[in-house]
Length: 302
Image 1 (tube, rainbow, N blue to C red):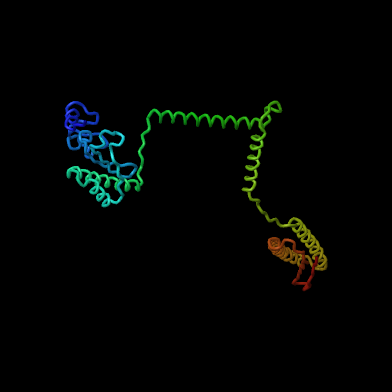
Image 2 (cartoon, rainbow, N blue to C red):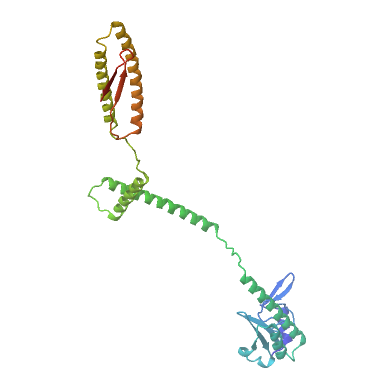
């Protein structure tokens, strides 16, 4: 036979495994407690007629206990599923707790209100993106840093050794004594060929323009003017045979000055012709000499 008062006296004054005593008061850790406070009206063990609300994976259930099922512990609690609508859930509570104490019904409705508000806040927080703060031990972080440093050094050493060995194989230091993977060696050769080809592509060929037959034209022009001077001197000697000594001297001076002027003009003309023409055909040169006293003209054509 169950006696609620005796059970409460034993729990309250002797020992209760669900009681939590702190400075602000005594609280109850029993999952069926409707308020979470350790007192006579809220204790689920010391009340043979009791009701509460529990949450199972976001679904609320109304739990009810009566004295008629006290001798059946496996069927002690009756469970009723509550809808997600708050108003309909209140109607179901009023329907199942019609003749129960008003204070207990009020506590059950208060618990339903708090749990509904908590569920709404949980949904809002789940929709927000929040940063997750995680702690890492210092020893573990230092150990990982040391391992990473050692791994980097080992990787650099392996690469340098591989590079040195491939260079030696390329130079033929080992000869045909040792067996080595040909793929690595061929890969190194391909890399060198690509590098050389890239350098050749970068260097652009220079284009130069050169005049043709310049030296030959200069030599021909010099020969022409040389012959011209010889023929002119011979002609002048023939004309001056019958003249007197004084007249011969005067004519020689005039002819010498005119010959110098004509040679200067011919040299200037030659320079202009060399800069403008490349493979131009050579033309005839006509030189005309006029004497004042003899009033004769001598022409030399080449």
